[in-house]
Image 1: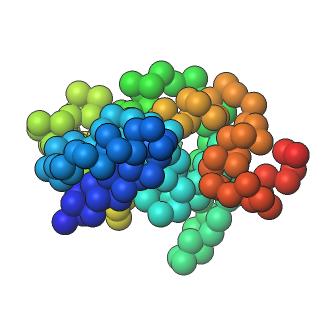
Image 2: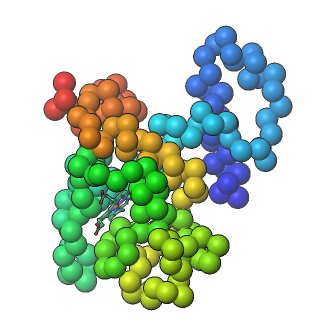
Length: 187
Ligand code: HEC
């Protein structure tokens, strides 16, 4: 059901994004909701929506500008470190995909986002649940991501954060509003 809803959103976004000359072409096509959404959608826009609070909520720990989050205390009074700056990350895209899919091995709050990760058919760093006890794995995030969504968020990280100077253009894209107050410091 989630797939279906997301596919519908994706199809609507695709139709909206298509500029007028292509509008007729899009309208003439019978939508096939069982087909994978067009590749264009697995781009920056999808990556941003994964990063924002609605889906992956990466910004909670890594900051909306990728500079890292603020330390916080949980309900049990434990102190948690925020996520590190993604601007300073030295990881390749493949390493990021593995990290986001699996979560950080060891005692870390970097969650696992791929539901099937650590299973025999999708090992993480060559290991499965049989090799690594639950306590050594960060838990699965409440709203797991699809592999395409993970690829898209890495694209966004590498476009706007990693080794980059976060620009006004990136900021406006992230907030999706030309008058976003959070971007004032970049004006
Ligand atoms: C609850 C906090 C939290 C959330 C939510 C979270 N992260 Fe993390 N993330 C961390 C922490 C903490 C680390 C550091 C892990 C370590 O090395 O100990 C990390 C590490 C990473 C790294 C590796 C950076 C490096 O170079 O070492 C990437 C990439 C990353 N996170 C991406 C994401 C993405 C994308 C999302 C959302 C889909 C996300 N994170 C959500 C806390 C979080």
